[in-house]
Amino acid sequence: MEAYTPMSVEEFRRAAHETVDWMADFLGSIEQYPVRSQVEPGEIMAQLPDSAPSEAQPLEAIMEDFKQIVLPGVTHWQHPSFFAYFPANSSYPSVLAEMLTATLGAQGMIWQTSPAATEMEQQVMRWLRDMIGLPAEFEGVIQDTASTSTLVALISARERATAFQVNERGFVETERLTVYASSQTHSSIEKGVKIAGFGRQALRQIEVDHEYAMRPDALRRALEADRAAGLVPACVVATIGTTGSTAIDPLAEIAAICKEFGVWLHVDAALAGTAMVLPDLRRFQQGVEHVDSYTFNPHKWMFTNFDCSAYFVRDPATLTRTFEIHPEYLKTKEGTAVNNYRDWGVQLGRRFRALKLWFVIRSYGVSGLQRVIRDHLELAQWVRSEVEASPEFELLAPVPLNTVCLRYRPDPAAPLEEINRLNAEIMERINAGGKAYFTHTKLDGRFTIRFVIGQTYTARRHVEAGWRLLCETARAVKRELG
Ligand SMILES: *Cc1c(COP(=O)(O)O)cnc(C)c1O
Image (cartoon, rainbow, N blue to C red):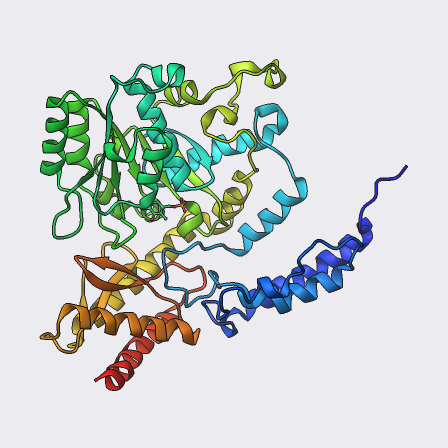
């Protein structure tokens, strides 16, 4: 009996060529599409049948529906005028590698299930470690997202603080572990604290200074108070490049305090880690040689398709002791002579994610990556200078990286609520138009439009057009409302 497949290998070849042609046409003309999807809630669902087809359908029909139904419901993260959130950029070499990864369909849970997946991951993580100036004793592993990397750090810190006893017998009443992060940290820290069993109340939100960076004196006071109360400080999470405004926590001072209190120090550099390919920017992570773990997302700003989060640890033994499992059916003769990445995180099964990083790093070269990152940083400084020169706009945070936090404030005497409403309307008007996409945060109660430059295909002309659009839309909205 032959295996049933919906197409033959020759039909696959033909369809694949056509699909690649579509992919190149799409990426080559992506500027024609609205950046933010313009559909209403439920619009896509209404076009999808209620049940699965019982009979085979031809690929042409599936592709046609992809174009007609799916595409309008996609927000185009690869559009050069995507200035929202943080980027999740990709690149031609990354897409090619993802095609190969999908074709191999290999599973990298242990060394034997694909030795190349394991050994390439080991080596590419060393490349990355050296590229961003982390200490040579660090070892890396690819996690799916920064949320998972941080969860893994929190669980490792929990185990170190309790001599691996929570893994053994769970939390007991007498153990009250605490975790510290600034009030500007990403929501994934709180989520990790909940999942890891610390409980949300164990998370201390440390005050920030006027630049939204963690205040080391406030961290010290919180640690002292908790220790005096009989609690056990287990982990501090410092952020290099907060999601709101890319604020940079003072790592060297925080590291010294963590050392003094014997607390695990985890660094969340989800976006900013990529910028560390530029040696002069490593001033932002001074003190990194003293941290216990560090994560950054090549899937954000390093031209590598989602998902790909790099997680580095000083002491892999603590990590594997926290996560290792030894079921009989996964025992192999190689044993501990090789890395078995199932023991380096939450998942058992793992995609061959190192392949796309290898394609990207080799295709760009370190110098190519440095060049593009430098371009993005320069464009952000250009926007900053435009904002500063404008009497009607104002800057709401420093611009150390690629994100400009701004608002329109033509009348300085207007009440906060009114300025907030005005800026929310300006942003919504732009996003509904589809020419560019911005998202916001709130800084000290102020509605803040974030102008983030980090898309693979973003050129100066896109940034200039984005700034012009902001200025024109702001004035139009003001005329209408005023
Ligand atoms: C984006 C971001 C995260 C979350 O990243 P995921 O990979 O989507 O989990 C965490 N921390 C910071 C600072 C971020 O900017």
